[in-house]
Image (cartoon, rainbow, N blue to C red; front, top):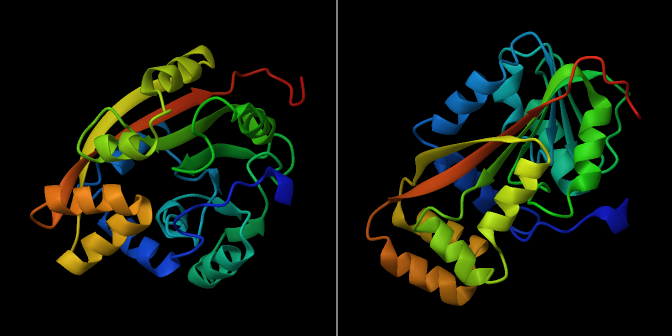
Length: 237
């Protein structure tokens, strides 16, 4: 599995700071609201691909029948298991988006948030999600919208080869619907905001971002991409 994995530049190295980031993200709940409108997971079987240390598992577990977190980085697998210990129906497995350790046609929602599914090159993960989804099940991908500033401006400054229009075209060709969501990241103190920006960006861009945010919050755009598996499709075909 190691050859399939691209190390995460933030949570793998700074899980505690990333915890702060997770708590600051989507303070208005706009992403969760959009996701729930697209696919209600109540009473259903959910997979969270690239679940990290399991931050989103309790949210799904509140209403889902079962929740399976899949994460390739073993230290994060251990953290996710500790976080979800005692939550009924929650399991955390070691695995990758390209090789989900799950049976065919066994889940209703495959969810991934800012993990693996970044555009061209993620075709193996899309095929694998289709394999484990039941007919009528949903693959939902939550990713940052780099066309929305200021966060998107900072991302493109660090990734000059990233082409948002090409990524959008890729998912459109693959049959995904796209809902654009605007929300905010809000921090409790300035030190937390600065620490998060420093693990997300190069030193140069992080310094720029710190200068451009005078307070404790800034707007952020997301894309919620979704594709439903057709009823009648046989796994592996």
